[in-house]
Image: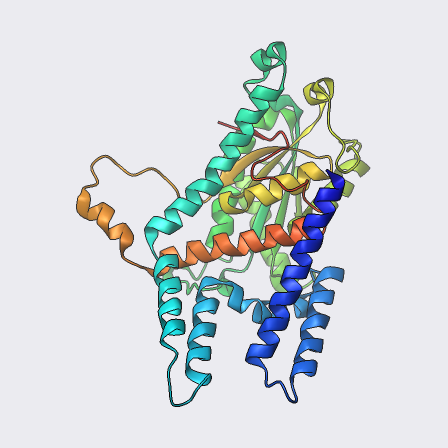
Length: 375
């Protein structure tokens, strides 16, 4: 199994290398920029491998990986269609670009991808009921809330004025926090109310701010105050700046909890026994449903048992009152659907990168680890 896992990772790296080499030959003039462009791309890839959290590397990676996103792929194909022969437009590339944009912008596709990601969490919970013994499951259909020693809220930006693709209205200008982060904080407070007896430590991974600056301290205070107002003791709140960096959050949380003797994590990849599962402390993970698979498996892979609480569910079932015209509208492209499809695809690429770095369990089309959920 380990050899197969290693060969799979190797083939993925070879495929990515070949794809980048093909892009260099197609997009950069071969005579004088091929080696230079190839060298720059190689440096960025190596930088992402060595230090994936570096902002400079991240910026260049966003530019290089643009053709891997639905919108970026369409733009790349249109660019090639216009530049391949100045006197003739490549119709096949234009048709392909339009097809990519149309399909990725259809609400039907976006909803289907969202449902697939969200249902994987529920399937993981069903795996837990199947894998544990009958006697244990009778007592454990409900998550042992008394074992919830920590809660991690995975955030995006903290600053409302730096939210990508969002222009806050004037009436919202007095709210210093990103509304997406506020929503997750509210969800975390709701969960805390159910596990308050265990007094878990709450870690918020609010990124995109400098904690040492006046603005950063104001944002941290706003986050803390919002949680305190919802009943979470201020001494139980820990704010870090890892944002959506799942790997950095795993390492931080593992060290943070181990230092407080709240966890004795297993070695990476080591399996828990049934007895361990009855007494192991839990980490409640509050994160978007589209990212929950990668986040939960990354925690589990490092020996931290997760209770999943997904937020931002896009795949809500339709009402029976919806008629044929409402369902037909799912075939009409819109920007919202393109945004969800792009997020799903970016999460898929991130999961692939995590797998190649060895930060996820061996590859499988479903969750192999036992992950619990709160109903």
